[in-house]
Image 1 (cartoon, rainbow, N blue to C red):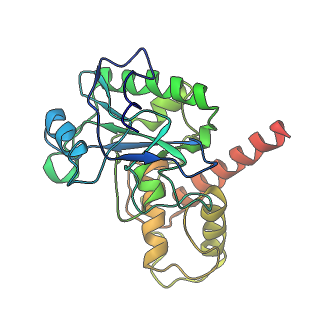
Image 2 (cartoon, rainbow, N blue to C red):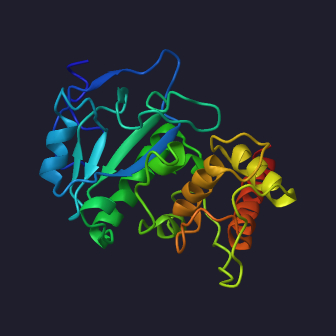
Length: 261
């Protein structure tokens, strides 16, 4: 594996910073997902250090600095260690099934801030290339929080998912406006809306049993959904705005499948 970062996979890359924390993908697996993270560290230099230290046991394929500079750490053909314990649509080895991009941002603990336009333009350009090279579905451009609800919350509610989708990257529907008079369902609720939301979240790819009450685990998955698709209030409540957004997102995905068929 030592020669896997001898050259960049993209002309957009401005530098190489190899990480030893790599291995081959599981036999028969190829990248079908693009997972977007934030670094959660104060500077890009600190992120590169952590992502290349053997004792930290983490890595990613690319890091994008706030000024738009793209650094490659792991060759796309290799398995980087960026997703951890995760799940999407029945797949549990997300590292073997994905390419991971770490986007420099201090994160919620160290001073979460907006993602600069230069950085977002670099994310867009690189994502377009990766999606094109590997024939990825728009629905498989995901947040770390999507594949690891509760354990991870990045890249968070300030990340420009809508902007990326407007420019052809990712799956999106405009979220239904929030009704401030709607408190949403409380924990323990068992009703048709809960069953519908569970079934739709599971069908879309989230790790959730399609049956059950509105319990803490479901609340965690609902918040993960909101961090990506209803960002103005990611509170974990199953309100009308969330359920309607989820319903329309799933319908848009189903329509896409029908057109492909």
